[in-house]
Image (cartoon, rainbow, N blue to C red; front, side):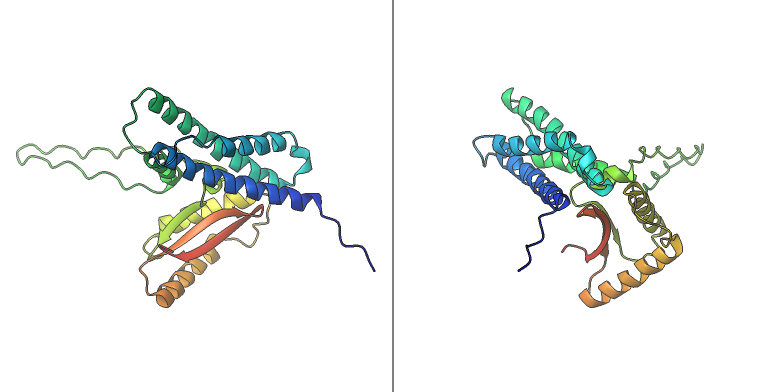
Length: 237
């Protein structure tokens, strides 16, 4: 009888990175409960587990593949952002100045993640009849964040499309993030062109809208097992 195949070290790394991702998501929920009054103590045990894994793999970069390092760096950045918010909320709570739920702070991260989406220019001010005034210049768009940061957020980079032919900027931004993330992860992108990507989004959107009788389809660029994936789903599911 042959011996069973030994457990590969790379599998162990993927397993622990998956646990790290789950713990970070759980930490967000536990802190929301704490700041909302549903927990009497902060989630120190969860923080300790995350810190141990972050420290362990910060010293084991040479043991990881490129995709695993990419995934680890995104998770570590997300944890650092949450910790910064947590520290500020904790300080405010201790000083008795808490005025809003932690969920609002979490939404701030989500809004920052979506900051790369095209922003419409503000409407021009109404000019008085006797003295027309020039149209005000559009506010400058915030600096675009890298695909690594966008894809690394919980849930990944998400775009909702209802009519790709009328929402070309959304499709182009989705393509750009997917292409940049794949290149950063060392994946092949030779077959990924804007033309065939736009055709795919157009066909997939029409297909899912017809099947689910919905108005829009969400596309998410995210990390799954160290690889960059594009997933399509009915909006709201």
